[in-house]
Image (cartoon, rainbow, N blue to C red; front, side, top):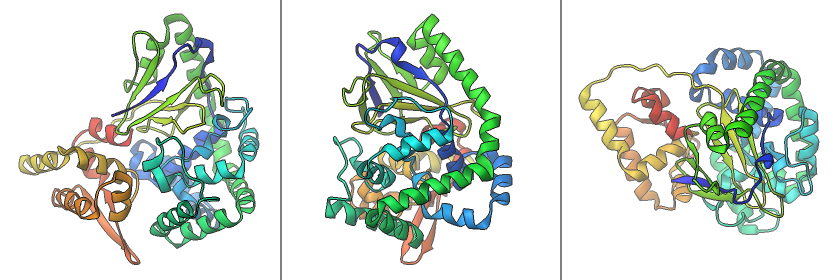
Length: 374
């Protein structure tokens, strides 16, 4: 499985390495919502969470599906803005201005991206503002996340203009509360990394530059296709006339082990790559237990389910929709994973949420957990 980017005929000067404050804010919010994904950031997430104003923390919960289980494209508006610059802006305020330039349909569809991840690569996603079935699907998925998420989704669909104002204020408040200081600390290193990789691209070529970005990235001998080794299928082009030719690669200090590839139809492709790879602590386990866990993970469908479960809690019906299998089949696979001690469940109202136990999976090796979360 992989995501491919068509770069046939793309001049090297249209391949851009640059930081993005808005994209980094997304990753920082993800780290706060899923600290188990980022053990190397434990000190930062603990200190930042403890210092958050309770009102701001409460507001973040309303829209957390935009960064908790998936990474919404709204955090890279430069890639989807018609006639836009095609690259991130220098400041968060300028990037929020770019976000304001997305039309309501683009914004809402991207914001509710988690509702139709299975349709991401099918040439476009239905607009919940115009399609009653898409609206019903979005609200059904939001309801499974919780009452706050459902309320937010209803407000977004009924009055996108007001919610967009609310969203911008939320991100500005995050900047004031913690992100401005954080960005001031990490931006120089990201700028230096982008400058270095730009120089590698100029002097040694694209294969060498991609090798420095991630071992999961490669390019064919004819330099026509970049392949990202991920546990999803997808494709995009860096020469779409709607967005203009170009490929953007953005570093992140908060992203490891996630390697993100924006490949939405009509959006410029973006690779969001992590800086550094902190090692996960390992712990010994019995041979019998290890064998049971490896056998549980050997099935390709269970590996695909684990990719979802590693990111956030899911219900059985959500997993069935995303992976296009029946709910009973999902239940059988979940039973195997649970018997191996690889996941846990919790009830929220009438919904039962399942999630991978990353602390257990980490004992199987950092390569496995990095592959699942890539």
